[in-house]
Image 1 (cartoon, rainbow over the protein chains, first blue to last red):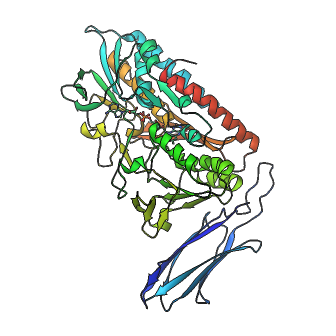
Image 2 (image 1 turned 135 degrees about the vertical axis):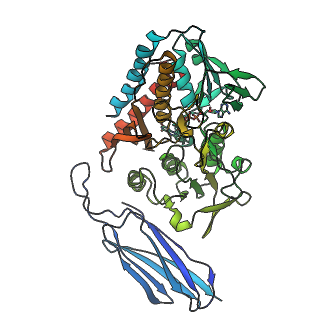
Image 3 (image 1 turned 180 degrees about the horizontal axis):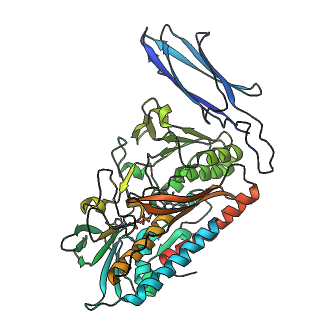
Length: 108
Length: 424
Ligand SMILES: Cc1cc2nc3c(=O)[nH]c(=O)nc-3n(C[C@H](O)[C@H](O)[C@H](O)COP(=O)(O)OP(=O)(O)OC[C@H]3O[C@@H](n4cnc5c(N)ncnc54)[C@H](O)[C@@H]3O)c2cc1C
């Protein structure tokens, strides 16, 4: 039912060998599969179960998410600026759908 | 449960006030003089309930000739209600309850000489003063956001011209635009209202500007009724509303009025229409009269609503530090009744009973989908504490929600009649 909206916040440019912060959020209900609807039927689980970040094609950050994670999961992590390149972000949902974003980073 | 709470408050408390206090009043030196500053929800309620008593002379000071209710003003923004239907005059209080209404603003209070000075120069002496000025904005906390900026990026957090401005902007916005709502830090007037606003504007967009988006930049990391809102947003407006917590944006730092953009620590967001709801504090007269503490709000005794800083002055409504009570119209009305009772009791030498305090709010998610809460409160250890609480749940049937939306409309007319007199 939800239409997840992913968003990241990354600096546009970073100095070489500097550590920079990446923030990632997705608007998502994280339906736990433990609730029932008004007719008493169980609402099936639908959560974002994995988040991956690649830098220049290389996987640099990955995390699994579980039912206990709140709606709109927010992640913050740090990376080391090595070279100009593309940061790719993807969120994987139960059922196999993925939501992706990319961001080109300038290393000076 | 909501019905029970609503009737209870209008019927029983008003009744109790008259039954207990009225017969005991014996005054040698004429009628007690009560001055009330602010003819909004809290002030009008105090005036009305004290005005009912023959032995008390009530003067109400309010600069505006009409009060436009903030509650239901989000329905107006969505085009679902006229502003006229949310506007109330103070005539009924004057005519029906013998209250003297003065169209002016209080500019100074002399707590020792027990007098209030008005902008027009008039001085009013009082036996007891009630102050109910609502909220003021902490302009300047967001760089570039001041009263002039609010004429371009409205807050619409005091209903009236600000609401009209925001409605006009939403109406003239092109389809596909982004409506940015900057939601304030706690504590602020009506915790669910920024999100109710997002819901109802989304309802308007869905029908008239379906490619438009709503972006909420929050000063907080969570908000009141979050689960209920997010469930509704995915059901009614999938993909339209995005909410970014403060931990993501690093909070709002500034606005650029010319560019219509909102600057956060991490990024600048361009808006087609921007609604900036600033951080809040007690109404300005509170500052001048020494009624506020370091928090920016007015500490009060939770039984009598008398200021703990200035004896003889009572404060009700959004301006107070209300403990567990949210800053809502229902709370202001409930506090005002307790305060009127306390004043009547002290003037008559009657015993002071701890008040029963209530709050019940209706929040619209769509025109036929509303949720509600109902809470009772009592003073405990110098603070107002929650006693019982009910709140709607995610997963309620459409029928339950439709009924709640219907109750809300009934509540509105009963409640405004209670505050401004007439009706019911
Ligand atoms: C969008 C929105 C939706 C809301 N929805 C709800 C809802 O559904 N339910 C609910 O219970 N509450 C709701 N509220 C909250 C509610 O409107 C307020 O909590 C309520 O108005 C508080 O009453 P008050 O008397 O403290 O202040 P107000 O009603 O604002 O009254 C203050 C009055 O004091 C006057 N004043 C100020 N300074 C002076 C002075 N120096 N001299 C003389 N007069 C002065 C002002 O002109 C004003 O008329 C909502 C608020 C907003 C913004």
